Structure formats: structure tokens, C-alpha cells
Image (tube, rainbow, N blue to C red; front, side, top):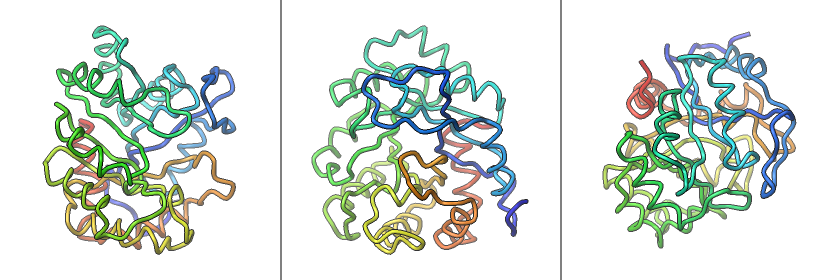
Length: 272
């Protein structure tokens, strides 16, 4: 059953993952979630009322993108993808991934990630010509020392999970200021998603993350994206569809929903 009132037509979930036991896990993986299938996700879409999705390669499968690509093919034109590649990935492979809907390269700079900082510039150079971006997840407290490096890249950067500051910071902290500087440079986006990844205070309101999310939305609505992070890997008590919608309603003002849920994903991921 759909949660009312409905979201705008074309609303997009810009970050989620698929898992299935038939695909081998990476030796470096630290998360091994249960199966999460296209049928399972379509049920969530029905409840939330979203129409589009960005499928993100999880750390579980390392550089093997097959699970996500197969799911994208099943979802059709309403799906785009974020792959994990490294400096050895060929131009032909990048072109192939682009043709099937991949629009970015993921860098997960936390335990379990398949690529590290040494690959950042080579990968950014390799994907610039096809118009991809770098999707970056890190402890946002590192942004103070990484912001100049990120601003120098030849591609756009998308920062996951409200910056994922661990532990959370105030909105006048130098690390949050660095995130704002990245956005002010005109080459960055931020996903309003997964506050449980960094919150100390916890649900339902995440009061230590809410001020950061609300500041970003107020200052930069044209650079914000919204996501579920379904199926919430690593969470012992994952949020329900109702929890996700309640947080969306609390954080995204009505006047910004069309841009954050529809227009921004169209611009960044190239939806029709």
C-alpha cells in the first residue's frame, strides 16, 4: 500500500543495493547481507511511491559489478547505476558500463572498500570523457584534509550520507565547512540518506544529523539528492518504509521536493 500523500511523479531513490547469494563476495568484504532482490525493492517502491532508482555497487562484491548490473537490466530504463572500477579498468569497459546505464564510479574509503585514494585521480581522469562522477563515502571529518584534492578533480563528486561525519559535527565545524566549500565550488552534490551510519543519538529524529541535513537543504537545494540506502546493510534494526517517509517529510520542505526528488536526479544521472 502506498504511503500518502504521494511523492512527485518521477521521484528517485539515488542510493540502494542488491544482494544475492549466487554472486561471489569479495575477499575484502566485511558485510554479507541476506538476499535483497528486485522483487523486494519493487515492493518498497510501491510503498514509497518512487519511480526511479540509482543502483549502487556495494562493498560486498568488490570490483565484480554483475549483481547490480543484472538488477539494473531487470529494472529497465528507470534505473541508473554506480559501479566500482579501478585504475586498471579499460576505456572499452567504461564505455560498456556507460551504455547500460552506469553514471559514476564509487569510492568507499572505509573498511571493506575495493579501491583507495591512490586510484582517485586515475579513475577520475578515465571517466571524465564519458561524463561520469565520483561517488564518495568517507568519514566526513577527513574532508578538511581532502577538499583541495577533490576540488582539483576533473569530474563532479557526490558525497554520501549527509557527509557521514563520525562522530557527528556541528554545522560550524571545519569539516562541515569543507563540505560546503566543495559544494560552493560547483562540482559537488550530497545525498540526504542513511543518518544511522553516523548518528550517535539515533532514530527516529536523529537530532545530531538533522541540523546538518537541514542546513544543506536550505543552502543548496539544487545540489541535494535523497536516498533510502535500502536494504540498510549492517543495521540490526533497519528503518521501515514508514520510517523512511517520516524522515523525508521531516527534512525535505514541500517547496524543495520536486527539485531534490526529481529534477536533481534527472540532471545528474541523465534520466529521460
